Image (cartoon, rainbow, N blue to C red; front, side):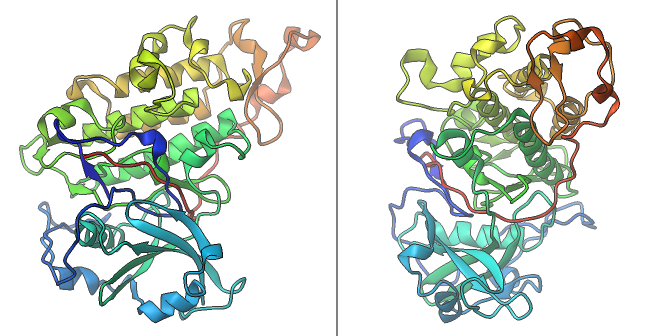
Length: 429
């Protein structure tokens, strides 16, 4: 869920946010009616036959043949009565629990048997909780892509609102980048994650009935067992403009530090707003720093403001690169990624690239065409194992072309659909 980013509204910073396993992020402030509502959202699919969105009522959304309607008792049994040791995480939306269901019948199963799922339980007092819950059911009940988290079903039982997702074992990108404990992500994995997330956004933007994600951030990118990235939490998703319109005007909701400046200032939302947010996350992948970090001093509190002057300078780029990479990344690839981030962060929305173009550049970084390397770039050789490219110290091997150069990049992997949990960033109002 999200908070408003209005000019006079109080804003939560992304540093204190946490998200797990499909949990949403919002500050719970207002009570919310549980009476049936009519939400006008749109139908989207790969093979949409209509050029205009089709409004759907709540009843039509919940009647989706692609989703299982669970009773509260079924999910209570699946999560062992929502026991504390089943808790995966907490966000403004509510709590996320680990559960088990039968793969065929979707009935509750014993722990350790059947299929593992992530069950998100809405707080009754959640801000605009029901509306965003219904929006997520609508979109994920119809959209299918390897880089979108799979929604298995939902529960609308009295005052209870729950969502059941595929389980994403590696958690969120936010956890891996910013929390102590997990092993630092290699360069190879970072680019793989960026590509997966870009594929998900590109799919949404290029659908015949365009979808604007509106809340792209590290805590909403979930990772499966093989570090394939999937977008989660569609509670703020919005139908894109139709006809000759270039944007849609809407209430400003999102997360401070990730939201595009023109959207925050005017409420005008477009696919290029998502591109800006992608640029922020790409910068987080490069630097290992949060979009907003109040523990820093001065300019360094805002990642974009601090890093921008270095992104276009090959000689100074190392100053913003994540020290946890320990220099083990290709200089040329890092500069290409930094230049791409700079394009995505252009203050002029029209000048930003389309997500399809962003994806093409990232794929080029992952599997660069064979070219003649400069002497300095020859220090970065692909590793024979599935690990990140590393810069080696000068050695006699430099005078002889390495046979590794003719092999395909170990990073050129095809993402497979698999689910995951994550922790949250506070959205801003």
